[in-house]
Image 1 (cartoon, each protein chain N blue to C red):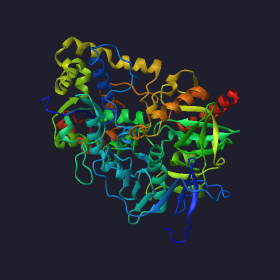
Image 2 (image 1 turned 90 degrees about the horizontal axis):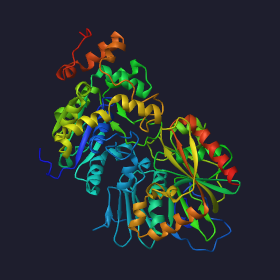
Image 3 (image 1 turned 30 degrees about the horizontal axis):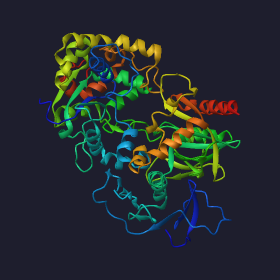
Image 4 (image 1 turned 30 degrees about the vertical axis):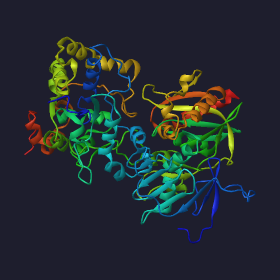
Length: 310
Length: 290
């Protein structure tokens, strides 16, 4: 896996990540910047099998009292994230490089971002006419599908599923993440994604990583936050602008794995980020059915809203 | 049954389209003293979701294989029980009673107060299931006879629910009635239609709810969740649990429709597939299935 590959720097949610193996889902770190040191380094090696007396534990994730974290997906490998130091990956025998990337840029990335005191939203994000549109929602709410539908209408993918926010005094930025959207067969078929653009995520798994036209890897001003609520209450999709702070609640479905952020003591980071969202970003709720026939309609509603904000 | 034994879950179990949601609505009203209910109010006795899996395990569920998810289902229930501050967690269940590949019961006895198992004539289930899943009757009858049938198990699309193994209708029934390793209260849908307040009181008593002996509250709750009222609310406001393809969730809710609308060869198939269990439950066989 590593024999013919030299270390490569990638743009990982605004951080410089150095990897000993290819990560085709991530944009490359700008070639002109050859001097800087990486913020995060990946390496292969031995990891702890488990953490003793962890602060929090599940069958897949342990968070240590020293803020180290261990992710263990038996068929793929273990990922050790010490509070400081390189992220160590111990692949399981027979695991495929693409599934290591899947876990690394999904669950592991979310934990890593919280550990580094960043604020990852559970959102996919696209860029259109210089403005970023984040689509937030819980799992299976259709974030990636809607992002892909927007890309089909001319937007560029900024990130899928995990969207890091950067806030300044007067604006909020969304930061580039993965260039692949992870989609299920029904959506890929609906959007007529050619088979050569469908990359496997796991050896036997219907979800695929789809190569989409991507925005330049940097931070973009976040214009719209659309929160998806799957509902069959309305027969047609309804997009509503939201004025009050209630639009950011419950934060549990807005912030990616919020509980893990809290375990790392990131309440202040979260508060700052959500406050900035409330101040500087137009917020919408989109209630829609799961019917795929509404996908394009939802994309049009969002594009109309963006034009209305301009 | 001792309600102070530390057990936490009260499983409201049925094969799909057998009255589970109706019972949940009655219980919702009962726990509010028999007051009118909003069918779209979230939160109580819901089915296990991917979001819960991810919250309790800190992992992206859609990056895992089905086998990886199935293997930790018992632990997920334990995690929910540990995190709960309630003495009783009511949960809707469509799974058959199953074991993981390593032999662990998914519905572990030590965290279960018991299971209310609602059974409905499979001929009526087949009709209702066809409308719910947008299938023709032929396919619906085939589904309820299929040992490999699952709910929310499509590999084409992501579902907000976890995959729930059903098995055939007969296997579903017998898995819970014969192998649940916990107290099981059998409830017939047809008896719920005849006397909903009485059946609700039985459920409340079984689950150890404080309202169990409140006859008036049970009657009010049964009236508040009368099928016509549920249907009317769905007409007026929609129902968030309705599948996208289904025209409506609360459709007819009556007994005997299957025998009226299913063609003879499908009635024969159902009775051939499920006759033994149907007779055990008091559903009279009518087709010549010999």
